[in-house]
Length: 285
Image (cartoon, rainbow, N blue to C red):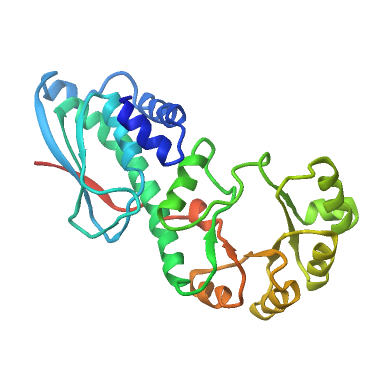
């Protein structure tokens, strides 16, 4: 990997070695030989091509695709940057190299680009729906194994923000923790006793639980499956003393109604677990 690409990935908040590992694993899945291309093209037969958007949306994964091209010694030129809005027919990346290498790179690059751009595009729809409110859309841990960092990066490209990266960096006290501990207060106090400076969020199903979480010192509360009216009441009850996140059964149609209740975040697992792929194709030129 070139120093320039390494720096680009780091600036994007990605671990270059982790991205390269994902790419190498994906390329290895195709096997040692390309039994279609190798009989047709000599090793150094050249080709040029463009990766082109075939629909309107937001791009994510340009430097990730670049890792694929560098691994296979395909020259590339990015025409857009991650986070850019693009339209059908817009060239995202131009490539040049041996035809065999370009064709080997094609599917892995597209798999990553279309998936990450799909997440970024879905996230932007939520961001646009909530424009003018203080609320932000936030992801969850509902991600594909091995791709969490990339999927959460794509959320950022779409204008969203990340929740915790794993179980290690922030505590989320959920209903099962509360049930097993006996109460919101007992669960919160147990975590706080061991981790005095850790960010702790408490999931609440009722306004009574919100009041209890606030009383025990919680400064981040997840409002689980509450109605818009209940969320508005929670906002009034908390009075700015804790950040509030709406969760459970949220849809894009509801996004603005939920946002105007005054919550700080909308938790949307569908950003990563249900995003459609963004249509991109490679055309030789």
